[in-house]
Image 1 (cartoon, rainbow, N blue to C red):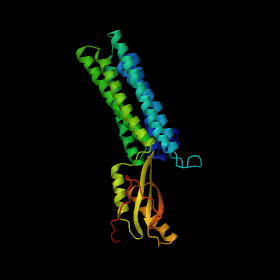
Image 2: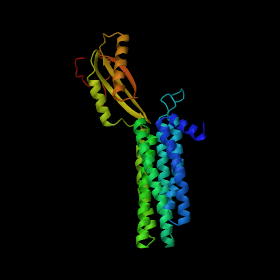
Image 3: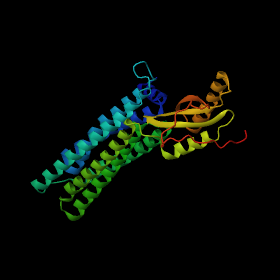
Image 4: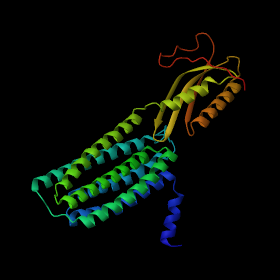
Length: 319
């Protein structure tokens, strides 16, 4: 078996999120070499700035790959709730890298403006950027698919990062074309400054999303509503529920709640009923980690829930 065939086989044995991260890493490694060489040789500060950003992408993609692999590790004694937050930390690191790249590009553009006109070879620079657009768009499309399939926060942020590269490359191409049409090199640093502003905005968006998970933000409203609808239609010994809480950690979704049951039920029957409810919830939200606390429906047994978590009455239906 050839080295290429062996590598291909191992690639397809990885989970989809790891494949996306590895593909992003390899494509960025190729593009950083092309862009940096083109920027230095052909004189475009916008192409050079895009190459610097691609160098950061190589590190970001490697980080995404490592954190995705870490997040897949099962819970252990030291990390009883798993390693899902590693993906959020990776997303924060990516935001920091994008922000740092924005500052570098802005400084390089301002220096070019201060120095005045410099010679730029348009044709070869355009070819390099066209290749960058095609590669980044293809890898970003696959990464978005992998993020939807796996629920990986790190891969989702990496896909957004790749799409920013598509926009960046498109803007650089536009700037180079304006330079070619007008003969005025000022468009090259102007495009670079616009790219820097765009990168800062993307860094903020990724950082905000990562922080939401680190502080245990609830699941999206539509998922919570579906969950509540499911619980309100449970019967056969179930008399209500309260203290419903949800949160997301990386690709893991955690749900915990109190179920109020008929006090006449035996322990084994109540346990069996909770297993059924847990099954209904995981059918609705695949992969969810569900924790249910049983409360017998007896006077004084249940503490009044806070106003934000009312004890909802059940709409009993026939099974």
